Image (cartoon, rainbow, N blue to C red; front, side):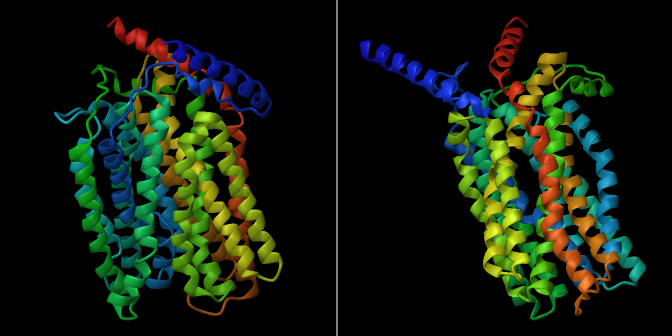
Length: 487
């Protein structure tokens, strides 16, 4: 007993010292984490692995649908012009402006015997995988028919992705109420996500070449079903093992009433704005790197390596719970974006220095390291913005806030991140599978270096205003617990 009192006293004293010295940097000191403001609701390793399996499975198809493959597939494999491919990607984002809030409202209204979130993994995993395969089927049609086919399959795949990915984020509110444990779960999710991406980026193009015997069109037709089966299996694994331990009260909220959770929800708006520009930057890098390596550096062989290096972002994603324990989520978020900006500057140094492959790849890796934190934090704190909305307005709209704040931002950012550089290339005289003019090479380099850098700076600005809302989390959680206790 005496030793416990001494240990607590020592922790409190040390916490005050650390907090006082770190406060000047805009971070919350270790003091706030030694004694948690409310009881810790720890999750089992089965829950953590099962949660990770959802994004592992999702990435097996997502990387093809919204990752760095789709733009080059449309232009260099399926034969669409860069401008047409860009338009398809943008039209899909216009559809997202409607389907994301619609999905969100559906999620907030529909309950099943499995709970509020996890049944969507069972219902949508097969359609998602199926349309991922169809998008890369590439049937031999007239040019206009190709455009229609590519647009329809891609848009449907994108819509279904919102339906299956949003519950991956929103179910976090049902797995635990503890903000720190949510960070831990999100770290596991990033672990699954990065390994899923690695499974695609490390092997996909090699498998396409192997099964296609030099014909990329045939190769993609044979490889996508393999990844689709893995996607379905992992979603079913997550569905079977996850349990919604935090049961939300069923409320008869008018359909448009769920939008009331946005009123005065500044944390959510900060997350939305920052996430949108983050994804534009992130996907722009992935969209342009195959073109940059092939045409500017004449090193097409490095494409698989560049995609596979995404796994290095695990280094910062896995450190996220520790970092947030000692500092703050705001600090982790800001540092992640700042490191990505640094990576772009190093990449520029490589381009300006005569296309130094060493510097360019170093900048690429630095950017990926920063992306681990910059990507994970917004996903985890979306649950906190759901709590904030309920605390502020009395309306809990986990489906709407996560559908628009996560899935819409990801897909809108992916669409714009794919469309903008393709438009820039199209106007500069880009011709697929040919020697590029100087204007096209400059456009590719600009899209690879400065377009992501600009978007990352814009993404960082709103993060600077998030810390004051993070400080309110203990108060918000305590008051919400008190409200629920009297119902």
